Every structure is written in structure tokens, then in C-alpha cells.
Image (tube, rainbow, N blue to C red; front, side):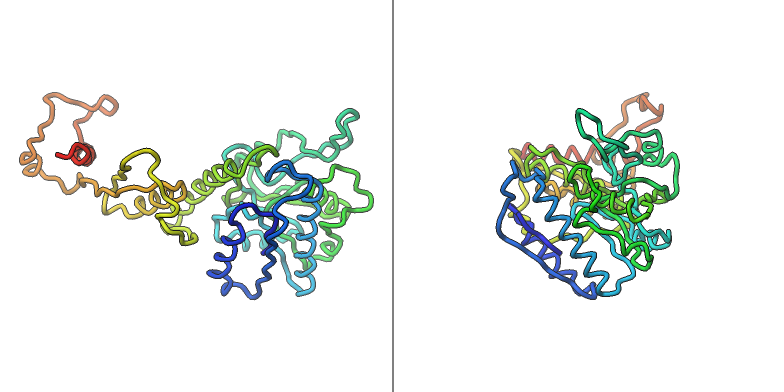
Length: 350
């Protein structure tokens, strides 16, 4: 685990994460670097000057070299902001039996961790050699209209290398291949290395594997990156909770330190006591958005009976029918109304 050039608390978060999970790993190498906090040429924390690309490529090359020296069978590269929600992702990628393969990751747009096309030659006025090229195949794969494992010219962010394959010995992140003339970019340098080694890249979308955030522009801020990542995290978390019914591990922070109520005096969250799964999901979502709430147990419509409704002086409007389904109010809808009514009474101090 390597971290450097930080102006936030990334190092502390990684250190706490390692403290909690390093016992799950055979070996952990920890490489924190507190200074410098930025690159000399950068115009902001989201700007990638050539020195930043070089540094990242050297780190990946060091990881690849270490894996080879340990006689590892595989090495899985995952960007820190990529979220794998399918616990079988590693096994599934190994089962594909490819030298270089990636699980297709989702975002809130068509963006993903692969390209279906690369510009074949430099555009005279722009020199856009080796850049992303739009193809008809890309949306078909990205939207699961075509499923399988597909040969593509570029995978990035999260991918698996099978080090048992002889061809993998020719792969390098750094230095760039001697014939490399494309733009200086880490994923393009590696794609060229793969091509020169005669290794085909593959993207797999047989299942849903996880999520990645949208890339930001060089002028954008860390606050924008935080908001972008929280959106991705909530999407990933919702999918995982729905599948497993369990929460995601997260670092313990003081609620008082993280949570706020904006300008509101109080925010209420209504929840049926018997729906613990929804409560956990909402609390985790609100936690990630740093919103403090008061939990109010909802009135359970299934527990309401006629005598209770009469005691509360609740009567159905004569002839009322739901405008969408043409039916009378259900007990669940009455319970929902009462839940809001009791909050209103509390707010009014009644």
C-alpha cells in the first residue's frame, strides 16, 4: 500500500484500514510518504503532470517486480477509488484463463475501465495517437446488450495479470517501450507494452463486479472529488446490501466529528422496526453523506386493527379510491400517514 503527495488525511485512513485488515493478508508492504504534498508542475490536486504519471508507473512496476520475485501466480491491480462489490471477482477473473483480463466496472454514465477502440495514427493537428476512439461495440458491452469476455485494446484501473503465462514476463509499466511515441499517460504506456508483448487485453461483463467514479477534470477540487466518490460509494453500497443483506466494512469515525444536520434543527428518518435491512442501508447512506438524523419508528400498518383506528378517530373518506390503482387506502398507507402525523406533533410541540 503506497500513498504520497497528499493534502488530505489519506495516509491516516490507509493506516487505520491496514491496522484492521492486514491480518487477512500473507504479507503487507506499507509505503507512506508525507512530503512533498504536491508535484512541482501541478496546477491542482486533480492535475496530472508528467512527473505524476512517471511516479505512478514506477509504483506499479515495483509491485509487478515484487510479485514476480515472490513467484506469485497472479497480481491484481485495483485503483484506490474502485469498488469491487462481487466477492467472487478474483476467482471469476482467474477462471477466464487470460494473461490480462479486467472485470467491467460501472459508473453513473457510460464510462468504464476499458476502451473498444484506439486512434490508430496521429492526427496531424492534434497528435492524438493512441487515444480513446468511439466504436459501436462499446455501448453494447457497457450496457450488457452483449455479454461475455471480449478482446479490447485497453483495460485500466482494475485488472488481473496471470504471471504463470510466459508472455507476461514481457509486460512493463515503466520505463515505456523504446518504440513508444504516444502521449505520456500511464494506461496508454501499459496498453502499448501489452501490444508489443503480443498480449491481448480482455474485458469481462458476464456479471456485475463493481463500480468506479467518473474521472474529474484537472481544474476540479478535492471537495468535488469527495462528492463524486461518495455518489459512487452509495451506488456500490446499495447494490451490495441488496444482494447480501449485510453492511460494508468502514472505518470507525466519531459521529460527532463527521455528521451534521445542515441548517435544519432536526432531520427525521422514519423506519419500520421490522425492516432492519432498510434501516441499516439508510443509516449507512446518511453516514457517508455526513447527515445526522433522529430515527423514528414507523407505525406498522400490519399491526393496526379496526379498534385502534376507531380509538384514533380515523375514518375513511366516503367513496375514496386511490387515483392510480382504484382501491381504498391500505393499512400500510394509514400507518405511513400516522408516522408523519406524530412527527408533525413533535415539531409543533403538541
